[in-house]
Length: 263
Image 1 (cartoon, rainbow, N blue to C red):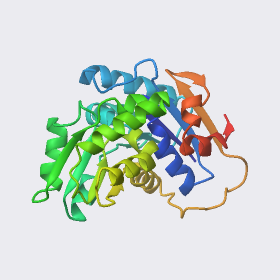
Image 2 (image 1 turned 90 degrees about the vertical axis):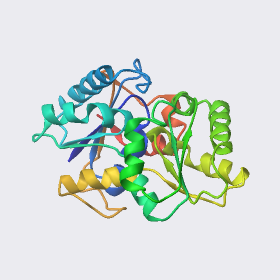
Image 3 (image 1 turned 135 degrees about the vertical axis):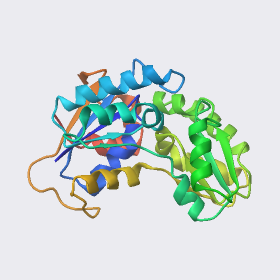
Image 4 (image 1 turned 90 degrees about the horizontal axis):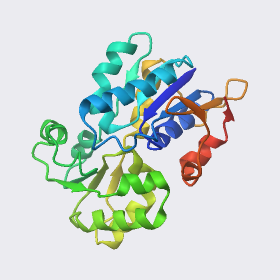
């Protein structure tokens, strides 16, 4: 079994690591667009074209499913990706965990990129799934870029700024960008320092991984042993073979994936 993941940058590491933990025997294809990152400020057509280019490069390696491990691309490119790839390759999008966060009761904060915060998409998500729950939208200026660069000082500054905008009584914080899950520990620490009462952090990586495996009929409990042979990892940057960079290896998820044999 082989699963491809598409994102502008290393935000796909969280979902890839979640797949790895659930199915250690699965091959992984990480297809990103570092030359075009970030996708958020781009127009919908440009985002869709770049996501399609990453997906086409991944599909040449014959994956069984493709995860769009990016909230922005899921908003703007999912219909085009599904129209081109399905039913041959199931395509699974990423949606911020607003619905389960609201089900836990409020108040809720949604951390997202400035381009996503206040957008019609996010407001519709809140209206549809968090009616009657107090929700605060928090723009995280520069956080995704800092995570992408592996710039710890910039990450801490962006996290502290977002934590200062987060109401102290918030019960759950939705991580509305896949990059944020890579620094969830720092986010939790900053929220405690800002006076928040140990809110629950909700990302989407594990749910997306589970959905991809369900689509393939291949769900497995965490810790399942490999089915024989070494799992493989392929990394594509702009469609070109590459390797996990220093920034990716600075995160636990990247180091987990680096243990796979390079394809």
